[in-house]
Image 1: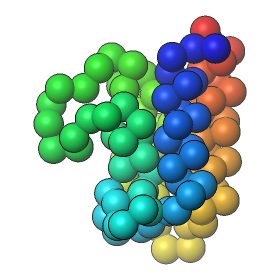
Image 2: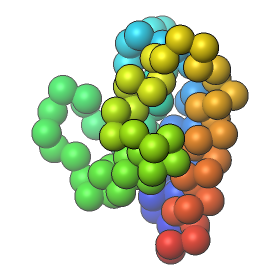
Image 3: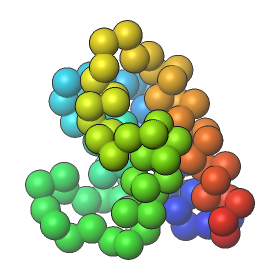
Length: 98
């Protein structure tokens, strides 16, 4: 298993427990980007991200076909199931590239 896939799995678990739109997190709920930040233990307001964080983010961006995960997450009609499916595909891609 790759480290990136492991972090994506951790982020997916957070989304599965509770997903939110319009904020990085609200109580136990997180958005796509908030889950990614939490899985890596990085504060979303800092510039101290690891290369693996960027790799995970780029995989998710390629799956949802946009570099704006927050905008994609917050689109009206977006569902938790769609977010989980995006994580599943990104995990699959991370495993293939390991």
